[in-house]
Length: 182
Image (cartoon, rainbow, N blue to C red; front, side, top):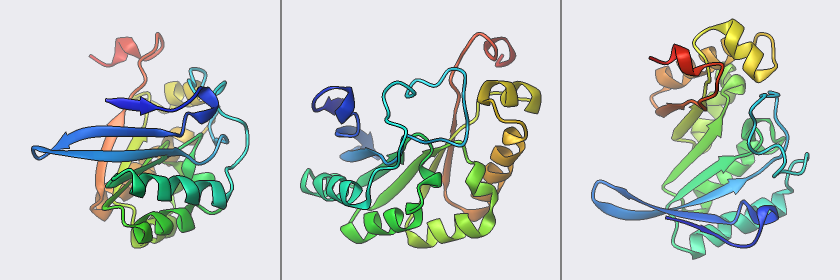
């Protein structure tokens, strides 16, 4: 069940209830940036997000709001959350605020850098939801608009799997990749 306050400009005011191990839990979803290091031809959020990073004070307010709402999980997304200049600090702020789980929704390109991933995990990141939309570099690079992006994402995925964090891959279905998914 999603609860949304206000219009599209308040898209980050989402709390979501979910059942895990038979227990009802709540998560806080924060869009921390409208910027991305991809240029996906099917991006759903392009018109929803202002093309800028949110300030630390705005993000801190959202983190604290989620704790007051009883949320146990913090979900950071964007745009691409890992390119926010304060990303590692934001993850740490979530852990220090009391979230039991911190997840990102990412294209994974920044996670190809092992040291960056290590720091994020050290700061509290424990779940990664990868957005990988094709099975070949040619198709993926076409869909993302970034030559070489697929290999970076795959390297980030491998690093995440090897790190032991919880990993999930999600695919946006479109007329370019659908026929390859069978």
